[in-house]
Length: 345
Image 1 (cartoon, rainbow, N blue to C red):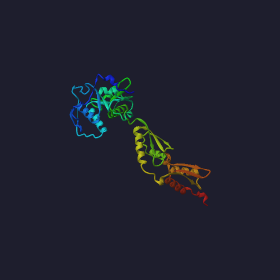
Image 2: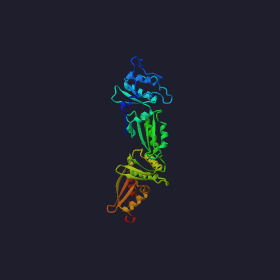
Image 3: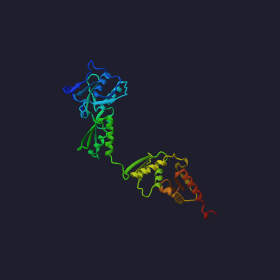
Image 4: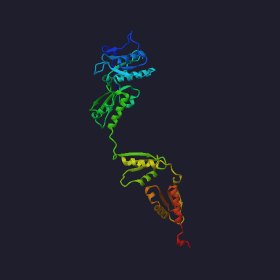
């Protein structure tokens, strides 16, 4: 939803069109304002950029002192028109005024508003993404957990003094914040931070980890060997993506991720690259060979880092593990795969 400026014709009785009289003093080429009335700023903008302004009769007066608004700015030398326009907006901001451009008028023409008028005429956006390129707007923020009355005071602290405003709608848990775009982004961050409950160690979470060096299955096996008796986290493997999925308490899962990062930070050693090979038996039966190897690699078999199977018909053992473990397995089989004593004669 957007709010539009009222037709100029309806404001005719309330506005003053600031024109430079024919005999007026020449405006400064280099803007120097030392506690100067805001009218000096308007005259400078008119003279240097051909800008016109529309405002209500008492708009230029401070609402508290009832005196003309004052501004100070020195040592600024804008050269281009965009630089001068940015300076104009900044000076008006310091005076507590907001300028909205009016279409269909000669030159650039701006309607000046104080805080209340700016909030009423600002474009209302639903997301901070919609603020791109906007100077002043009204941002709608809906809260789901935090109370609007508790969040509103925190947002007020970051709003532009005498310009930013906030409306609270308790029934719909909504805030409408009006201010310059950069302040609205800060307000959004405060609201979202308040609306999201703080992370706790005992929160149940699910996180993933992509293994870069080696296989995810072997990483799980390594993590199981590091598991403390009090830890209850669980892990599963996506073999196609080589990704680990971890679930459990936040503190435990984060600890496992730290361990994984340490282990996975080193490139795989070729001698420990995983492969599957068969070991041919001569005298041992596959069942005997499998039993021998399972005893030798008991810890790795339990963790899944090593897998062993026997095939009776072919008198073979299939061994899956690192190249290093395969060589150890072959050496162990050679040592025990001998002709029985009663058959040597």
